[in-house]
Length: 93
Image (cartoon, rainbow, N blue to C red; front, side, top):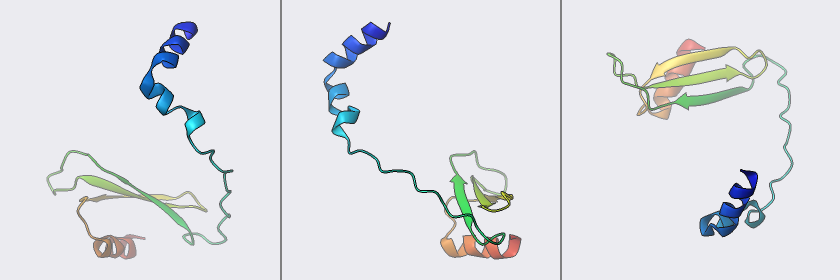
């Protein structure tokens, strides 16, 4: 099977165009500094594409403290503005 895959890839024009040899080498990973105080540095992500709830929420905003790994999950609408997200952050955290 390995031979079959190698033969297919060697004859596939698209496979040849996107081969790793044609991409710039990625740099070394940079380690993040360890935070000194809780909630001093956070990570956040948005989970979208969810079915709409009765309160019209269709996304989840995930906020994680990098020091304690404490996570907060907020049901939101994906069309909330940055100022609305800032209000939620100040009220809840």
